[in-house]
Length: 121
Image 1 (cartoon, rainbow, N blue to C red):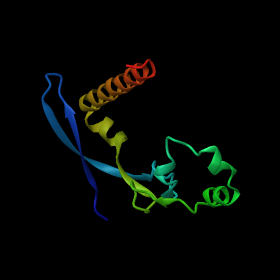
Image 2 (spheres, one colour):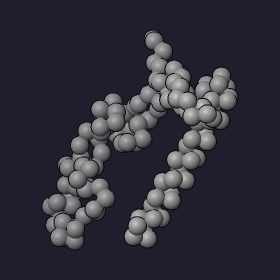
Image 3 (cartoon, rainbow, N blue to C red):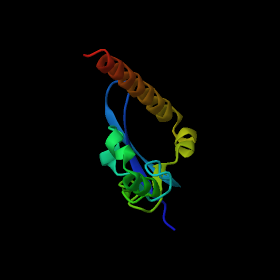
């Protein structure tokens, strides 16, 4: 069995970009929760109209997975390779701390952006 590797791109404190090659671990696919398929993305975000909700045949099919599509993340394999963050933290503590900081900054940015959109900006 070969070790699978993923490249992780980071930025140093002085803004220089660098990459680390890190081993991966197999995890349950977050896109389909290990089902191999998911609800058709055409239904995401917009929900179902009242007209569709009243259509019993449609709803029976929808609830039974007739309209599901193969998961685009795992390609139906139900698992994906994800960086082994425990290994990352233990072997590269400074880079791991940098990665955590980058994730926090991105989360803050996304929350701020969402608030601006809600306010009509």
